[in-house]
Image 1 (cartoon, rainbow over the protein chains, first blue to last red):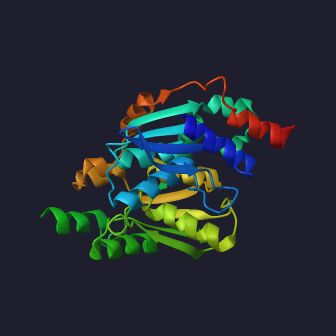
Image 2 (tube, each protein chain N blue to C red):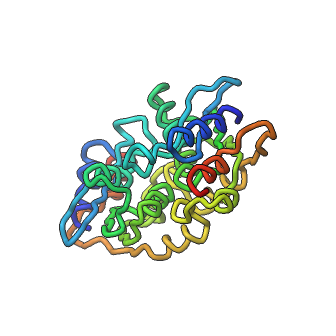
Length: 145
Length: 145
């Protein structure tokens, strides 16, 4: 965790946001990431997600279940979900969302549980037209039958 | 939405997962994406997120609040959160998570609300050591004072 926090501090000194993350296996750091939102127009440039992507490329695998994540700040739901899909469930973090809000971090850079629920409730479902191929059924037909 | 579903069908025909997405402004498609998990070891290769990243690069902006997302399948929480941070709140989807599970889509490729809550509850918070610089406070000192 010391290294994750150190990366976060260094990122702030370089004009970035206060977030760093490292992925560890057998006591060794195998991937690192920092928030890159100050450098690139890419909403997915969070420390945790970049460390995950780096490691996946490195080991050529989608399965990170043997690894541990240390993040300087509480991972957002984007990064949590990425960890879920990668099977990475051993997760430590240091600073909380409340600390970020207290420090004066912009509210639109913080997402609360209520913010996500509000977005989910606003999503609108449209039915599949009868004349269109059903993608899920086509997938099932090709892979399961 | 027709184009998003068409992309999903095409992606299945090419060996991929049944998900496609398009971003629209003023009735015109400005970005497209399909799920690329069959091609790259990158857990963030979801249709919606790739369309968002393509558009952000194109318009050199983090603000997608003027755009509408059409996704062939209900966006996962990773993509929902990315949309939240990008200010993209006008979201339509066609096929539901329940339809994916019913079609026989692998459970570890589907994340329920309970799966996410379980992961969140398992995350462990570690306090900041007293001798370490506080990244959030350093950020606040540099940007807010």
